[in-house]
Image 1 (cartoon, rainbow, N blue to C red):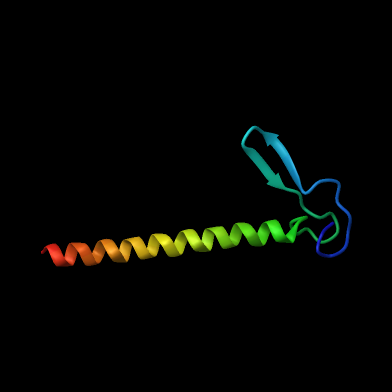
Image 2: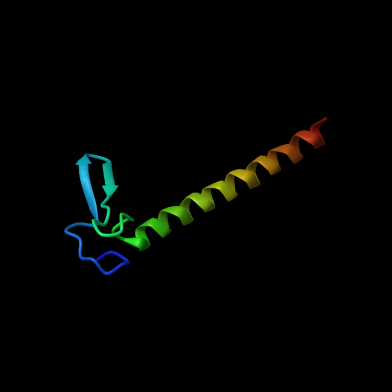
Length: 66
């Protein structure tokens, strides 16, 4: 069921092995499962924070070497 309350047949569509896409709600056009969408954004946010931390750490190491 979508966040707007409209029932959907499937939360995702399997196009090929390793290639799945979230289904869109026919009523509102948003992702059929809002929690999956939020989970993906959280993972991307954490990845970006880790990358930023590693880059700042690498910058500190380089400045101490020079």
